[in-house]
Image (tube, rainbow, N blue to C red):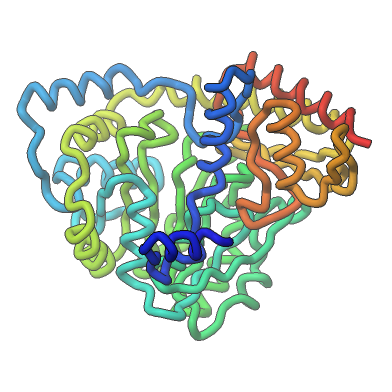
Length: 410
C-alpha cells in the first residue's frame, strides 16, 4: 500500500502537484541517522550541507543592534533598501555586474528565490534544463510549479559539467530556463569562463531560453580556481538571466534564511507578486545581519576556505585509496561525489547484494554507522555524496569505517 492510498483512507488526498514528490532524501537520511544516534549508536552524519563554522561575531552583533534599535517590524516586501544596496555593491565589487535596486530581490533563503522565479514564469508543460547531478530541490520545485524538468546526465568523465552539444540537443520550443549551479551541490564541480563560454554561445542562439545560475558556493573554491558568474562573461544575456546567491554557506548563516538575486526588473517585479502571497518580507533582523555580512570584514573567508580545502584533500585521498571507489577532486563547495561502481554486485556480510548506490549507502549506515547520500538522490548513479563540513576527527573515523566496510564486501 503506497502513501497516497494510506492518506486517502485516512480522509486526506494530497494535491496532484505533490503526489509524486516526497521529503528530500537528504533530510530522510539525516532523520534516520539522528534517530540511530538517539538510540545510542555511534553514527557519524556526513549528509548535511551546512558549514560547521559559527556565524561571524560582527554579524551576530549587527543583529543584536538591530533588535535593540527596534528593527523588528515588517520591512519592504522583497528586501530593505539597505540590504539591496549592499547586494548591489557586492555584485559590482565581486562579480563585475551592475544591478539597480529594483533589479534585486531578497527572500527567505535561495530556495524561495527559486520557487518565486519558477512560479512567476512557468506555465504547464514548460521545460527547465537541469544538468545532473543536481540539488534535489531544483526538479521538485519545477514540478510543483507545473513545469517539466529535463535532466541531462553529466558524469565524472565530463567533470560533472554540461557540454554545449548536450545543451543544444536538449533545447526545444518549450524550454523556458536552463539552470546552472557552480560550484555544485552535490559534486563540487565548478564552471570556469572556458567552461561557460560555449554554453552561453548556445543560449545566444536561442533567445526564448532564460538563464538561471545558483552561485551559493561562490566563496568556497580551491587550487586557484577563478569563480565567475555567466552574466559577467556575456552581458548580452543579462536581460534574460537571474543570478542567485545568499549568505548561508560563505557566512555560515543557514538558519538566518536570507537568499537574494539580481535580474531584469520585470522578472523581479513578477517574483515580488509571488512572495507577497507567500511569506511577505524576510526577517528584519536577518536582513540587518546580512548587510553586515556583505559589507563587513571578508578576510575570514580565506581561512575557512583553507580549512575546507584541507578536509577536501583528506577525503578525496582516503576515498581513492579504497578499492571499488573513485573520487574526482572537486573545484569547490564542501562535498565529494565519489563513484561506487566497483562495489555494485558485491555482497554484504549479512548476505545482501548491493544492486545500486542506495544499497551501498544503506549498508554504510546500518553496518558502519556512517550516513552519506546516494547519487540517485541527485539524479546520477552510481555515486554517493559526502559533506566534509565537519571536524577532521569525525572525517578520519568515518573514512576508516567506510574502508573497513568495503573490505568486508564479498
